[in-house]
Length: 276
Image (tube, rainbow, N blue to C red):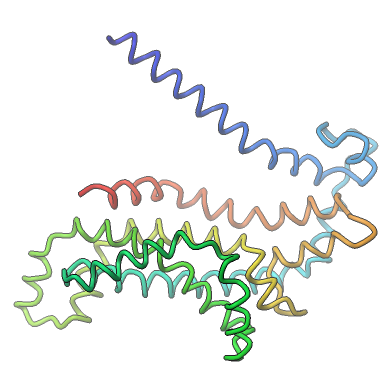
């Protein structure tokens, strides 16, 4: 029996390693090509750069072409503001749906769950028409749209976690004179630290890397995020794969650093939120 468990565990480890290699291989190739000139990429896209093809100029030119500082700040502001609003709205909504157990709250929760099944492409054209009519085709409108699309998943995650928060703590605080706002921000929010970090990580990664929605809403000079600016490397008649590879690496690096700093909270938050 012990040998069988060891074999099963080893099999899972091997499968995990193979899946890791499969998912990381495209990023590895992208990194290699970011250090090659155009000729080196066309000669051998999968190979390592040699003395004739190796160059660091790709990163310098990509940094300048991307207008990196401005684009980075656009991405950072939009991502941080959108994520903060998603966390605030979702946590409050989930808390109310858990604590006020009625048929209406159950229906509302099911509507949020069903909203996750609707692809963005199905609502893209009506959303743009509505946004134009309400003069929301700008950065503020983009943030509001992100909040709308991000709350469904976040509410579901908060909902599962808040079920594990003892109601006795809230009842004791109510007896001590806390109103609903004080009860939520003073008693409940500190207990949601783990799931909040998990929700923040997932939303930051999604919003930072998003291309489609910003391309529809804020694709104007000076407003563009980093993913939008990488489109400049792909022209109608020529494609600068060398600069594009370096530019994409510059876009990836900040979010990879953020993920590595917070990754331990993802599994913990999802697991704790799923246990009831």
